[in-house]
Length: 176
Image 1 (tube, rainbow, N blue to C red):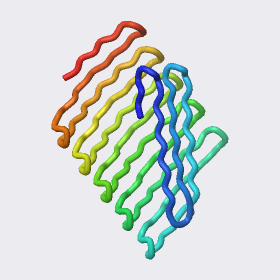
Image 2 (cartoon, rainbow, N blue to C red):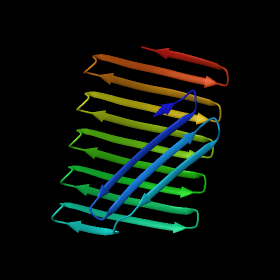
Image 3 (tube, rainbow, N blue to C red):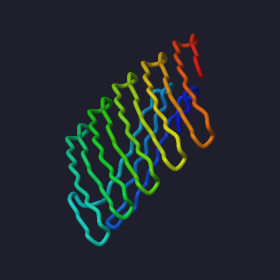
Image 4 (spheres, rainbow, N blue to C red):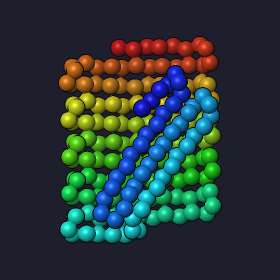
């Protein structure tokens, strides 16, 4: 969910499999200057099961507020792979993730970097089930930001290309 004018972005994902629960909640309130990311993972650092046919390899390092999180998750039952890298040094952090699912037939590739209020968000989302692709670039430096997105849907048979730029109350909107 992205609400550019209201300044709220929220992403919640939960996975329950064999040994535990993985929950990821990400909320960003751009105009209010609040950035929150909650990550909870409960599983072995390295685990393989032939019954469920998946492997889980993870690395987690923490030095108070500075930490890095690198994980690889693959499941043959659900037919998807999850590769993610997360690094945080207080308010400066980078989030790089790749998610692919054969069951839902889509791929999700995203890059997120934040240095307090200056950040960039680049994401690519493709779904074969709904037959559309979503490519977006989002950059913000406090109240000045640019939004470039491409949306295409084969089901509804249309394409949406838009550029949005704002410097406080002055902005330009170009769409096709």
